[in-house]
Length: 122
Image 1 (cartoon, rainbow, N blue to C red):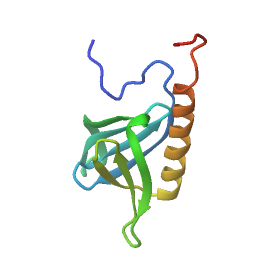
Image 2: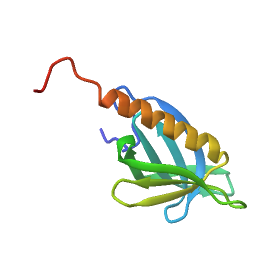
Image 3: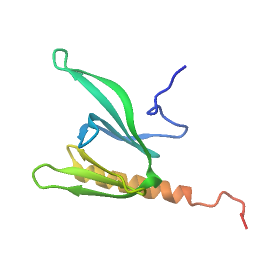
Image 4: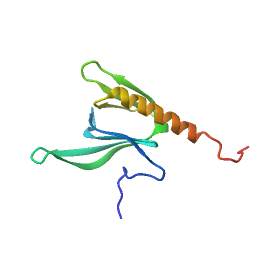
């Protein structure tokens, strides 16, 4: 059985999802979960107004995000920077909501990740 990189992982919950475009990756679907951000490339058919998911181009764990911010005045984008220096610019409908949700989910993720597991490592 084959699985997509966007298939949910154990304990993963979808928080927000939207059709969007990224400067280099082009058109697709941006998904925020409680564990990661996923961008799936899509191809649309104007005749049928349907979209087909082609491949996962970005599968970014939340702890690999160094910053998230809004950008632009006329063409607004949410900019996600990674700890390894990459930058992605997504044209989404509500950039303020995306920035807030990504920051909230990252804070929750990092808090859970940094909690002691019940035994001391010392």
